[in-house]
Image (tube, rainbow, N blue to C red):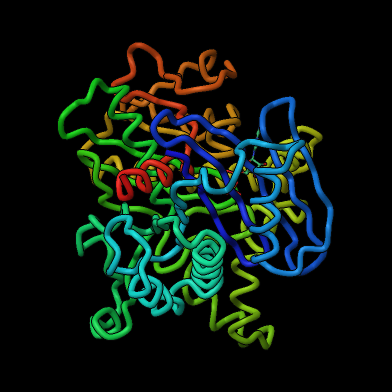
Length: 396
Ligand code: ADP
């Protein structure tokens, strides 16, 4: 079954065309700067890539352009859009209502609309993507796959915030967690690598521009670092992660900031970018640190310490860990970060093999010493494949 996987953002669209039965990736790409100017980058294979720069006024034109590119003579992956048998949508927030992926109906769209206050930037774009696909491909079923769903197994003691309880019951104030499809995929891959061990205890470190860690017991999320919003937890590219909440009124007073300015400050100006003053891209920070920039070094050390803090915390919670998994842009590619994170954790049975850590290969790999009680895995994430498989399972 050919599944078109769509991840719709406010000004960009990421997409993949996947054969869900064979996991074969047929084509992928991204449309950026929708409504500003517009560029489509389309990938058919390693050697066959295409960039189209054109004014793309809206998401509808963007999806039309993608579908045209998939069927156009020179860039053809399919003969007609009728070959697309289902569409899988990444949806940011499913609240407490969506505990798993679901077929999209009018009722489902209405529910996702009701959850907009919890994800004001993402859910509207996701809904737009669904409505456009339903219009352009009226006979094709759509499936919603939620970033929050995997974490719905978290127990109350981990999802409640220590604030007055009526704000949970009346205003849905609780930890939801994100990157659920990634944590789900990576933990399942790890369980396979552990020979399907029963009652497995796994810690997944998804370290990218956005980062989160998840404690997974027996395949189920029991705690994760992001909270009500994706701002909580680890220090990220531009997001602060956990801070003393007293900082907010202090800054509002000192700098005369309003709510929007505070949100912007913590979401877009903090984290790696804020501390380093250089960039949100970790590669640039590592480069600067190698050139002797002190603040870049502090940024790297702060980031790694926070990851380490949560690994230790979740190891305690799980009563030890069978495996620690690294995934996403930083987790998959940076041996330096993996080494720093694992440094001094031998006392807990976490022993990294520095040489294995430095070998760069595609696919899942084990990078711990043979004596290590805890396995250390690098597992490239594949959120789109999870979306395609969930879509297939619901549609078939
Ligand atoms: P997103 O959350 O946007 O999907 P990614 O998972 O692609 O982000 O991760 C992007 C991050 O990965 C960037 O900070 C980038 O610098 C970092 N990254 C990619 N390759 C490397 C590398 N070889 N070494 C260090 N960091 C890397």
